[in-house]
Structures are given as C-alpha cells and as structure tokens.
Length: 289
Image (cartoon, rainbow, N blue to C red):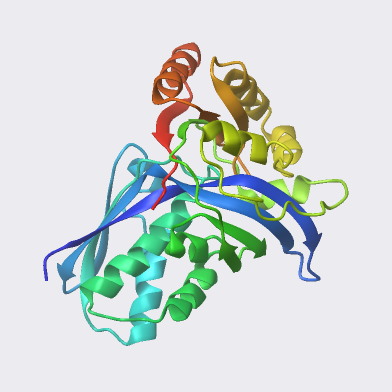
C-alpha cells in the first residue's frame, strides 16, 4: 500500500464552560468545539520498524526524535491493541505551537490512529478507536471525529454540533507553552450553568459571533493570571478592524478572532504580526467538513 497522509487540524473551543468537578479532580466541561483548516500533518509509510521523523516550524520543539510524543504513543497503543507485527515510518509535520490550547497533540494522535488503521488494513469500530483515544487524552476522541461537536463530561461525551459557516479566523500564540493542568489548578470561582447547544445553525460569521457572545471561556482569567500576555493578545485581536469576536481557546495560550471576510482577517493577521514579531500569528478558516 502507498503511504497514507492525514490532516491533524487545530481544535478551537468556541465556548468553554466549567460546570463541575468529579471526585477524582477532573473538571466537567460544556464546550462547543470546532476545527480549522490549519493544522499539522501525519504521513505513514510501510516499514519494519516503528519510527517517527519530525519537521515543520515546531518540529524541533518536540525533541530530536519525538520519543515522548503522542504520535508514537498512539501508534504503539494501536499496534498492541490490534496485535499488529508491522511497523510504520511516521512523519509529523508540526505547524501548530506546542501546549497552545488548540489540541495539536491530540489531533496528531487522532490522525495517527486513523492513518495507521488504513496503512495496517485495520477496520476498528469507531467506539474502539475513541476508547484508545481517551486513554491518550480527553481531547483525542473529538479529534477522531474531526467535526463540530458539543463536549460534555471531561470531554468524552461528544454530541452533535451545529453546521458552521467557513468563517475567517486569526489565531495568535505568544510562543510560550501553558500546560493545561496548571490552568485548571489556578481556576477559582463558582461553576457555570453550561452553554447548551446553539439554537440554530448560524448562517454567517456575524450570526455565529452573536450566538457565541453570551458564552465565554471559563479558564481565561486563570490563564491570564499565569501568563499575562494572553490579555495583550486578546486586546490586540479585539481592537483589530473587523473583529466580530475574540477569545481564548481551551486552556490557552492561543487566542482567536472571527471575521466576516478573509480580507479583514488577513489584514488583521498582518497588522498583529508586525506589531508583535515574537508572536505566532496565522489566518485560516473554520473547517466545515
């Protein structure tokens, strides 16, 4: 079989409410999740050994061989689960910042499970892949689905989300990782009631921004307390001409803004990048399929 290539798109928490906490310490979420056209890429080719090569703008940040990367962990777990003797030559093209709140590692792991299932001619049930994914991280199951969804529980309960328009976006990251556990530990205050699903599928970017406006990200204050530059990024996005909505994704540090047109998004990205040359800035769109 020829090599297999899978996209690993960035995941955005368009809303993120913390609605409770389990006895084991895990927080309970209610979140509307979507994906972008920008992301990493996983390529897999037949090989006797299981290896991982890294490239892309952020490949070096994962170390010389990525031995602790979720990609290899996912590959080893699937191989053991399926009883596969074959290996695979994996290549991760890392375009997304590390520890950035946009599900890069989780999306990479999901893409690996899907790519190797095809390469090794496996046909796992969706629920079996989701079970393996959850063992790798709470965000992996929704990344396996790869479509707009409502997440509940610790992220393992995945419900359908509304169809979203291909809204132009700007993503901004300060180039500083922010580990998720630290943000959850820093969170203070009461739990939210939850956002619930959007009443209807928004037809355009303006309608989506209006529907999202009442529901923010409950981790923003905690993340800013640990990394104040997040407030600067939000301010830069909020004051950009044409911004419809700006907020932080996940546990940070990446922030995003919605725009009505690609022209406005591209101009905003260029202006923010010029004003803050140390930040990672990218213009993209919401993924609709």
